[in-house]
Image (cartoon, rainbow, N blue to C red; front, side, top):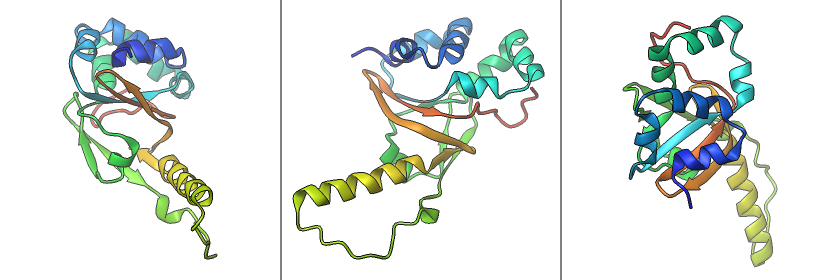
Length: 169
């Protein structure tokens, strides 16, 4: 298995985030270190949803770019199941991310199901787990793919670029 930076780079769905990491001094080295780290990695489509002015600010201001990228990285290893037990996670940037799950709003049904069969029990458990994982949000960004593992951490793909408080884009 590769480290978390190499894993992110190999996926080719997060090129803009990876290029940003490569342009900020020390971040690649940090993420190649022992860790563990949890990264909430935005897709390229999430960056595309930023306004042209916001994208220009990130491209032209290395300090702001570094703050935004570090805001997606949390020291420690947090799987999707671990996230359900958290309210906040402190980032490398220094501020906290708010963890939220709207699983209470996901209708699970009123019908009673006999789960004496191992196959049915597995299917029922897997379905609930999938619903729960898809309900996790980080500062309003949904986790769209969870638990991408690396040697020194874990990644969760999100559909939003997270902007730290008091950061003007």
